Amino acid sequence: MTPDAEPLIHVDRHGLDIDEAVAFYEGVYSSRDISVGRAADGHFSWRFRAVGDDEVVVGTSSVDAPRWGTVGQSPTYVLAWTTRPGLAVDTAGRDPIAMDPGVPVMWPSGRDIEFDGAPTTLHTVRFAAAFLESVAAAQRSTVPGPLRFATRADAEGTDRLRAVIGSVAPELLRPDTSRERRAALNMLVAEAVVDAYDAVPVADVVLHEGPATMRFAQEWMVQNAHRPITSTDVSRATGINARSLQATFQRHAGTSPMAFLREVRLHRVRAQLVAADPGVTTVATIAGAWGFGHLGRFAGYYADAFGELPSETLRRGRR
Image (cartoon, rainbow, N blue to C red; front, side, top):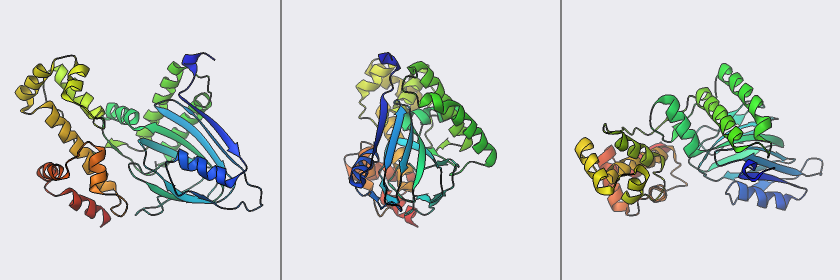
């Protein structure tokens, strides 16, 4: 196997100890409260396997006992299906999802989710958020942003998705699949998921008209809004100096590159506040994750953009 054929992720762990399983899964799921019960026949075992790269990771998890707890928030979208009934996710949410065997489901994203499950095997396809959002944007001819999904696909969409997964999974699960081949397969399954679940960006960010370099700058900022971007970073990414970029934005959009980036981030914050559980998250946590360190100033920007305070958006989610 050549170095460039190796995936960035290749995990294969198994064992017979409950405490070991709990510690491992809490690490995998960024959690501190996963619990595993006793196996009905007294013979406990578990196995976790994951193979993938920085775009898509395909995994299988088997636990021979009931388990429950919380899956922590992560920058991924998760498609999952089980082999047996008895697993429910988002059990503390407004619309808990009871997973039927063999039926793929998109898990809620952008927040912690609670789960409760009987012994079963869980299959997952994890998509890096930026990758799936870019695929959806290309499909919908829009800019990348957080995605909204139908929880379940219709029968026809489910059949198509199963066919695609069945055709690509054997190669995606092979650690020696080349990077080039893996990238092509990643795209196939991502496009199938976008189609099956009617994935659309929830943030309403409009690109300003202008030269090609200005459009590229806007698209780059949308895709990298979660990073600590400076005007120098934007200039370097577009290949034009900061002063020229500033003048281009002022001339064609009446704003600055950093003001446009702030608008993008405000929409991202709003999308997460709408979906968040106000009992477990705060405005400060979400705003801080998008680079807003001064809460008073952030609240003013938010109110100007959306006509209400961010705390009001969060409370409305509870109602």
